[in-house]
Amino acid sequence: MEPAVEYEIDLTIDAKGKKCPMPVLMTSQGIKKIESGQIMLVEATDGGSRSDIPSWAKDTGNELLDASSGDGFYRYVIRKK
Image 1 (cartoon, one colour):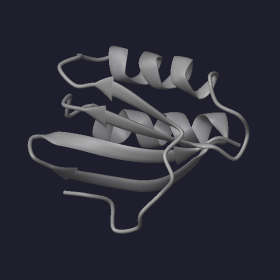
Image 2 (tube, rainbow, N blue to C red):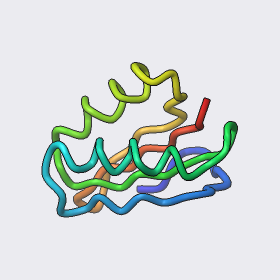
Image 3 (tube, rainbow, N blue to C red):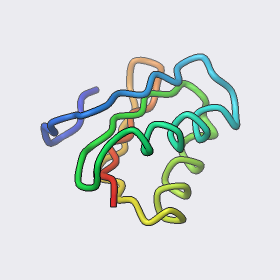
Image 4 (cartoon, rainbow, N blue to C red):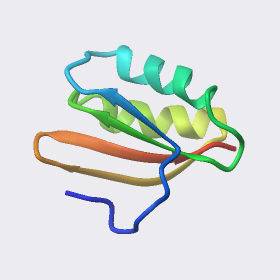
């Protein structure tokens, strides 16, 4: 399942197969590699990411643009603050 809106992705984090807390740690490391306003895609298979990634985005002030699931994994589109 693709995001409802097409985004220009600047960085993709592949956290598929990683268990908590790795998807959040990888997301946190990834956001440091892009500039403010750029967009990162995170893909994960850990069901805990459904709450962890949105909470992380809110706590860090980054914008969760889209969250979707399908094909056995979850996708999060995040804009760096």
